[in-house]
Each structure stands twice: as structure tokens, then as C-alpha cells.
Image (cartoon, rainbow, N blue to C red; front, side, top):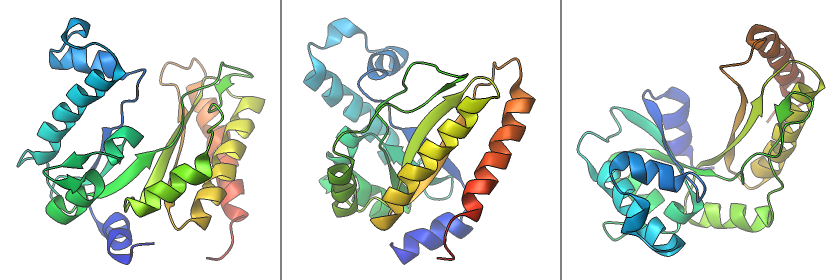
Length: 206
């Protein structure tokens, strides 16, 4: 674990910027930016364009460590460069912004009022490359629609993956999101809090 980045995350202030649109959400993000589907043909051109958008955001004088504490990157963005440096290195060395990597591959169909993460193939390889690219941590998202058994399944999956991530020296962001439109949001949040605290109690002293 990088001790400087750790202290920045532990004691610093600022937003965590979500720059992690993946293949499924990128066309909509480009459309909102003013780039329609007829401007590119195929995934490679699409990712080239969205990296240009992200580069413009990242290199903006307003996008700095005073306002932004961390940035979550899509794997494709992690593997690219900004002004001649790997994206994660540019964020940290030029901006003082801590880089995180989105590792989930999207959501499985809803069961028991919740959506678990889809399986993450080759996770060990992805985590190894994240370490090589100087990521500080990871992010993985699940969605909870209703209280019930699904809440426990979501938290168990999140913490199971978190333990695998911690072994590599990366710091996982746990993100079991309760749907803001849930008709029983308060109940789901109460159950989620209890499940998270129970899992935290099982972690080792380190």
C-alpha cells in the first residue's frame, strides 16, 4: 500500500470523481457530451473518443487535488496515457488525485430484492495489473432494491471480494448501493448497516 496515497485518502478532503463509464454506459455518456453514435464506428473509436473527453476533464485546471481527492477509472482508462504518462500516474503526480479502478463487470439480474455483481473473470490478473499501474484501490457496485435475504448476499459478496483485494495491497471501496427509488429504502438501509458492521467485526486487526 502506498503510504502517501493512504494518508491522502484517510485525512484529505474533496470529491471522488467517477470517470469509470464502461462499454455499456459509454455511448450515453458521449451523447450527453454532444457526440452521437454516428461519430464513431466500433468500440475502439468509441473508447478513443471517451478517453479524449476524460483527458480534457483530467487536465482541466479546475480538476485538481484541492477539489478532487480521488478518481475512479475504467480499466481501459487505466491502460491509457494522459499527456505521455499512464493515467493513474498523471492523476497522482500532476494533480495529487488518488486513482482507483472499477473492477465490477456490471450487475446480475435481480433476485431476492437485490442485484449482485456478475462474476469477474481473471480478477487476479486485473488486480495484478492495477498494482503495476499504481492504482491505490478498487471500486465495485451492487444494488439493493428491497430489504430481505438479498441484502445479506450483496454484503457477503462485497466483503468476499474485498478480502481478495486486500491481499494484493489495494484498498477496496465497498459499494452496496440502496436504490434511491426503493419503496422500503429506510428498512433496507437499516439492514444493510447491520450487515456491514457484522462483516467489519470479522476483519483482522490489521
